[in-house]
Length: 162
Image 1 (cartoon, one colour):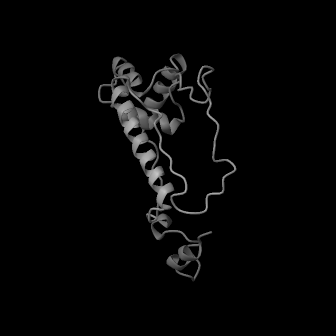
Image 2 (cartoon, rainbow, N blue to C red):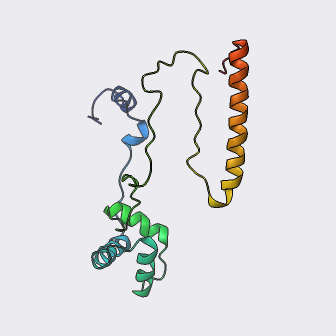
């Protein structure tokens, strides 16, 4: 790719290959011996306790004699090694059998002008906010009904918002 002995300057070779000139001079540094030792210990601990994350591994390393080790360094080494803690992840893909599935009413409707369809999302309702949300929804319904009645009587359309 890059030929340092070619008569074409390095900057033009880099431009032709769409590389930054700084990447031509990059020399990777070898991993320090301390990090290699830590990575061996992390690998051993992770094999024994696969559910342990960076914080737990940091504490275990400190108990093992590594005094100056931080969570972020352990996390960096774990990423470098390609390991992560095994834990239960949220199961958001399965639908609950008791929840009702509402039909999508706009499936066959061609939407071709602004303000033809409005939507809102009310999926989250905390227990202490339910009363306020019911009041808000009743006001919203009242405003929507008044708007619809006015629109039907006068054939008025609001100006599009761009």
